[in-house]
Image 1 (tube, protein in one colour):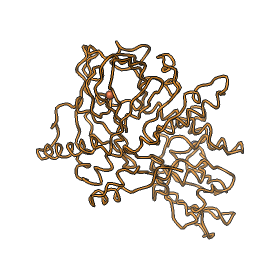
Image 2 (cartoon, protein in one colour):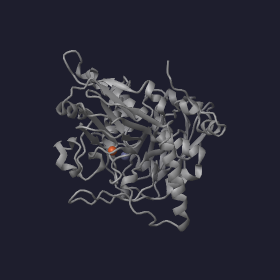
Image 3 (cartoon, protein in one colour):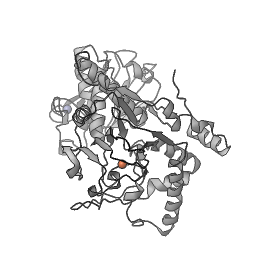
Image 4 (cartoon, helix red, strand yellow):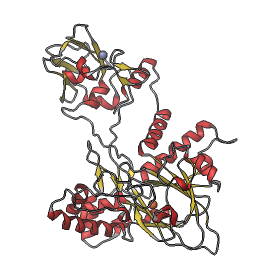
Length: 479
Ligand SMILES: [Fe+2]
Ligand SMILES: [Zn+2]
């Protein structure tokens, strides 16, 4: 049984306007279709794409299929077109197809890199012959060296851009949440993540996959039962990937791993015992770290306080977008400078970026950058009217982030580590007394996604057939 239900942003907005708060106490589930390259490369057309195959054997000008269920391929001086089962026709420019050839002359099977230069692609290249088969199409080009390319149907279906045939959403299975996540926050056991006498290397790898999948879905995940030492914490973090080094070098225990108690000499409020409102870290980097990992090692009595605050910024942004679409678009458009200037010998001035960053291809929200303390001087490149619009929008945003509905407060204890996707989930803390010892690290966005994706592929069902497996290895990269 799952405590999460699917609600649309429109439904949220309507209910908010009607004054009923029920949906705000309900977790919003955002499930999108996966657009990943189809892994099925069986010797017949892939089942996931079966609906795209032709129902009739329409005669083609340049190729007559030898089986009734093959797509129909035609070519001319500029394009290759493929008629699928549902009648839709994908058109590919000749130059595009030749550029994407993955024969051994064009693509290095081991390094998975393109070998061909753009100057190797004649502007007037066209197909001499096209030969469909159950698995794909072979094209002999007009080049003097009789270059032949083979493209699996699954590649052509996924790559189709005129028209697009598959959705390109990347945020499948993200689960937006609010304060009610407190009832059942995502958590995994330390013992399932590291090899031991009772847990094999493969079981531990599967454990890391479950762990990172939760981080992907919820934007954070606790790990319980972690030995209360910096060494074990660091070793656990390195199960995910490389630790990122920062300018906070002098509090680093080893590489980029940090281990500190409150101390203002570090030039950042994170190292004081002041309360911190919800924020994302590293807004002073052009490429903020995506994972931020904390482990409270000790906070002995009479020390008190220091509750941790987590806010799903994607949830808060979805509320803002539903209630105040203009504010959402203002914060998506206007670039905000940030800086880190409090450490001797460091002056970080990243590229100015908007608070909400979107995927250039899918348009989805992919990153929230928000740290009011590190915000720089506004207005450069803005129009006069943008200033009022930005303050209005940012105030509404702050209201959404600081609402009791959005805030999830939790008291961390030694032995429980928290992993936060810093591109999505904001963190803060209440004030505290006494000496708190914290350790942790940052991991880059591309690094942890690489780990997640390689684990997914490692444990995914593979084509049994050797040729199909080779084909998958060549065609499943580059997306
Ligand atoms: Fe922080
Ligand atoms: Zn080639």
